[in-house]
Image (cartoon, rainbow, N blue to C red; front, side, top):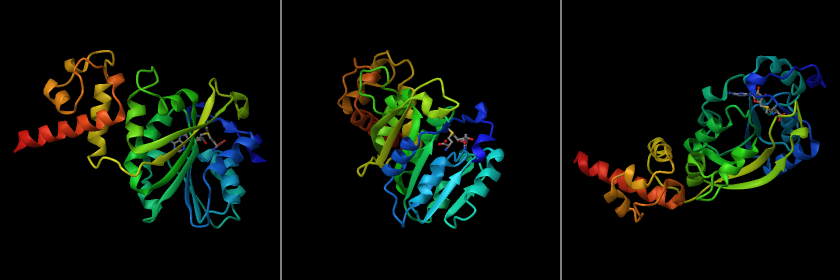
Length: 263
Ligand SMILES: C[S@@+](CC[C@H](N)C(=O)[O-])C[C@H]1O[C@@H](n2cnc3c(N)ncnc32)[C@H](O)[C@@H]1O
């Protein structure tokens, strides 16, 4: 296999998953049908891609930034009519253009240096997502599934859990990768919630992110007490004590206040 000749690069967060068992397990989680449009973020040398293609989706778009992988990928998947390599940085791809009006399943053993940024993009694509299965640094996976009043409960927890049901599927030890990363990894599954707030995602993202600055401070020092009262939140509380529903109520009240002051 060509991957032996391929020299991984740190700058692209390249850690090739070599455990067949884990690769199969990730592919199983996606429950691929012949109607599925799959998007894989970070194809690398294509081990996971191959397992996904074996399950015969309608189409698999593989996004990869590293030009050195392109000849390997193109040779390996030359016979697959349903595979399209997108030779781009993920952040330059508009997933809506790949979805063709249908829902997509997104999968990836994500480059850890930009994994959080990739995750933060997902709520913006909520309407076209069927599900996501991602390999992440375990620490990030723990943030995604954290409960209030824990250290792992952060902006990322709140922003993503507002829009997705998130399940921690398994931990993956470093020895299952070449080269092994310095940290343990974990696989998570994210399913879009049916009942999500309809306000602007970007404004909400910035609002939650600001609230998490100086997280130990009482909310009344960061936000108008009247607003807290309207949202049913005690002003002495700290941001890390709020439930997801509190953030949604608070931003809803904030928008109402903003709307009133405009009129
Ligand atoms: C952890 S490796 C996973 C490789 C392979 N899918 C596997 O499971 O072994 C992450 C892959 O994402 C690619 N990558 C890194 N940054 C990227 C970006 N911004 N856009 C697209 N691909 C990226 C890397 O080049 C690398 O191939």
